[in-house]
Image (tube, rainbow, N blue to C red):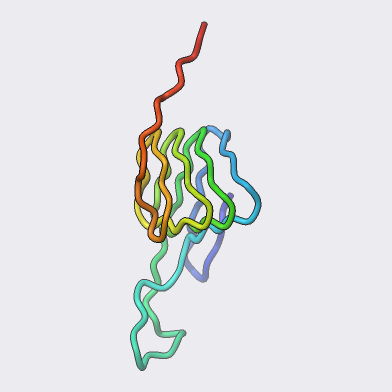
Length: 111
């Protein structure tokens, strides 16, 4: 997936494809850094960044993922979470802003 915002080009990476998301999530590859009182909206500084979603991560309904965030393998993002920082592998993160609340055991693959 690629998104072009203005002159800058950002990418949303779905790494190794198996990402489960429930309907209505928001992947924001660009947005305002800070709001400066008295400045026009068109003059506000912008922040752009790639979003990396690793295989086996789950993203709940109405979750929002901001620019520059990496969600590692097997991570679970709760419903309505606002992900502002990287989420490590095999954890559950929820809240506004999203924080890791629990570690999850990595499943053993039988051969």
